[in-house]
Image (tube, rainbow, N blue to C red; front, side, top):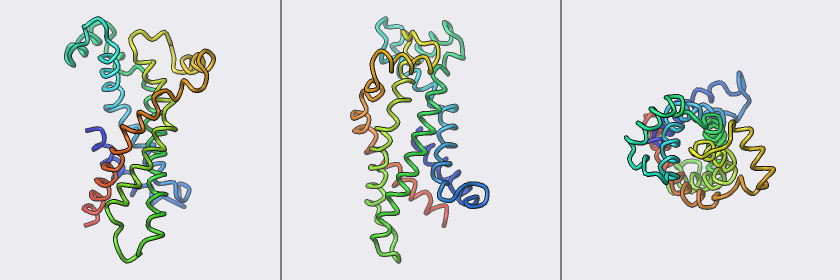
Length: 210
């Protein structure tokens, strides 16, 4: 659902920034700016609460987070409604930074395919998929630090008061490599999704353009 909403947001924001390129915003910045706006909408609207629920269930040893409804009830009762937005800042950074990278890389990689293809023909769907998959490989690596910080902040056993404190202590106690733990597993998980997502995006754009 989040990926589908991301496709819709991209299809909504990118044409707006394309019309503003060279006038209000720098040239060739529409993809990155659309990514930032999409990430902001996702982080506030859906991703932060859903990620909190996921992290609590994955790290639960007591059994009180056994079900989605039970998790929501316990968090609301014991910590209040604002608890659902713990880790909001790193989630905003992760979503906005990650989608800015993703959309920019996708546009660039797709452009390379277009430069080597027949300009009179539409780009083959597999090239859209390859561009999306490769873009997500880059995102999986570069977006690992805010994702790791976000996960640590949302863990119930977290000892960190702020995202900044979490980042400082991780760097001091565990080194910079701690920010990239699990990055390759994330790449393996999201690369296929990027291929599907951008194929869907191109199809949606073709429908909107009539």
